[in-house]
Length: 296
Image (cartoon, rainbow, N blue to C red):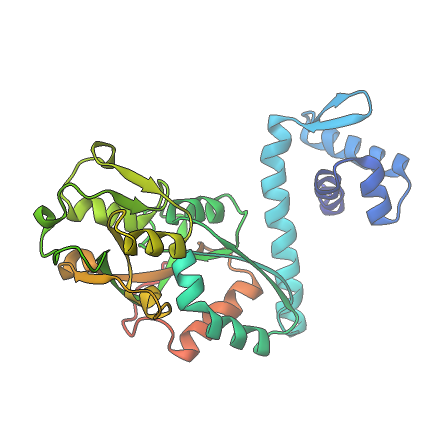
């Protein structure tokens, strides 16, 4: 199997066809077609379903694409390491919206200052969506809310968060789950780790037995809580970043109320941009002072 054939194969997939791939690679389309046929002959299985002038990846092509992407990334990583050049390329980073708003601005500004040749692409999402995106190589790394359960993912502790149940100022203090009876729960959609923490604190097997208002913005959640629409669970750092909002903060037990946000990446696949981010996090002391095993 020729490495350059794998590069051509990935370019055809990324560009959506032979002609666009040929233009990107500065080759003639007939050459691209020949190289794809050579690759298919080498693996012994069709990599595309051909429908007139369109190509569609076969199941085998889908499998090979993942390996091709990994090999190409490793090749680039090796070239940069051996050459001793500064990290460059793209870093596809994911983060919770809460982390993005309250913790990342200073860190990302310093990252951009130290590594100006790295193009940062930031995506926000729920804990589970970010974990899936890293596992499926749609993201290189992500700041999530809880330690990943997958052994394929490495992690390091970063930000220590304190969670609080918030309610309107008119609501009586919430000291236990009984004080929250009858209240609607305002939370991000399924996949949110904070939503699961709230569920555990309320000692309910499922949130489906309660009225749930699902929103995708912390500003919207806080505004609805302040208006008396229900209660929510969120990091106090987020509330500190919105001093104009008036809500009651109700502390919950430390076992549910204290978490450490980890940075995750695929074990054994850290690219130079990911290594640069990990180095910065460790050097600036942004992480938890506890040094956890990183499962490298």
